[in-house]
Image: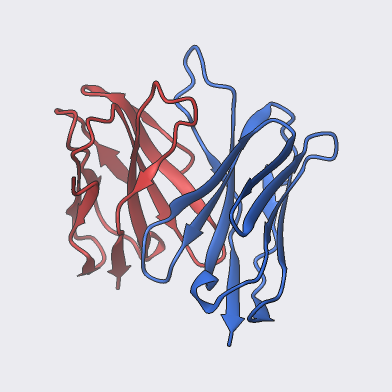
Amino acid sequence: NAGVTQTPKFRILKIGQSMTLQCTQDMNHNYMYWYRQDPGMGLKLIYYSVGAGITDKGEVPNGYNVSRSTTEDFPLRLELAAPSQTSVYFCASSYGRSVSYEQYFGPGTRLTVT
Amino acid sequence: QKEVEQDPGPLSVPEGAIVSLNCTYSNSAFQYFMWYRQYSRKGPELLMYTYSSGNKEDGRFTAQVDKSSKYISLFIRDSQPSDSATYLCAMRIRAGGTSYGKLTFGQGTILTVHP
């Protein structure tokens, strides 16, 4: 199993551009999450999904959109990129029926908006 | 007030030292407590997980939860240079109903163990 994979690893965007961060998991997990991590700030939840076709906002959803058409994929869309979206983005997944709800993280996408 | 507070450090210790990492929290509904380890430029990975109060040991690592004080700790014995990483505490309420296993993370503590 590859686990959770994310592409691209790095990206530089100009202000106002748009892009999609890709996330795929091969563990048949029903729950998936997008986080952003800023220095010294821990992980903030952007959006989450409890299954294909079901998504909802987390703590910091403004400026982002998501979709979940399959169990495996959970892309994050940035529209009109702003410098405040410079961050490291992590996708994670978990098996909803697990007692621990352990979340498995991808390697991250480092995004710079200039 | 943040729901979860963690001293960001950085913390630098010599090899072989005992390390204590701590988090405090304000939400008394938290019942599951986790420690994630994150190596530089990698995603976090689950290190330990405990339910409610008490201790849990796994090799050189011990996780401790004191719900009465809303305080959790991670102890690392005989620390090694390979333990150098950022350690994030995370916690969640009891799952069920519309819960989706949402985790609330601390800010992370940067630990360096030097030879």
